[in-house]
Length: 196
Image (cartoon, rainbow, N blue to C red; front, side):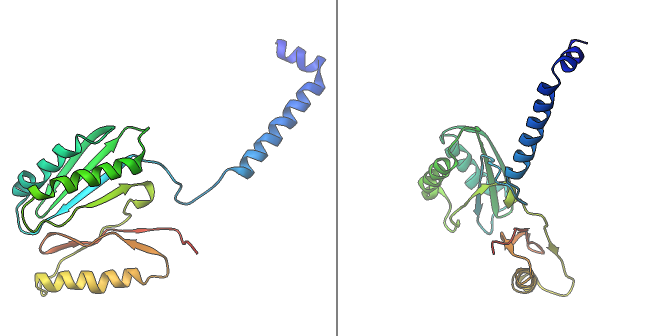
């Protein structure tokens, strides 16, 4: 009840306060940046090893275990998660919120280069990818065929479908073509806003 008495006794104070709130609100609306894909800092880095041939169990024993072990020495690691499939190992390293992600990526790069000599011959150099909100795939495409061979299906997905997606009017970034099973091709891709 006291606020009502104060408003009746000092009406100009409340009018000025209302105008001030209105001006500050309009100023904040006008100066707030907007973006389709805002820059959200997510401290996650993914390391992807590829090695065609071994089973998931062998890939885990020969590649994933060593990689997880060496990632534990990187500064400010919060959690390490891994997934191993036939011919690929994906290791997700989550960091503490205050980490400098560029320095962490440099440490990861040095760590994986330090264990490459322990990897079996033929293991491809790993991909070290920073995870951000704008790099999340929005579609995954899988192919199968009764008439095409495995290599023909792979080539069809890589050279025909992927090229058609890439020549779309909208700018598209295709992350990779990955064959988890020899008869299945996954093509993750993402849509980014135009830079022009």
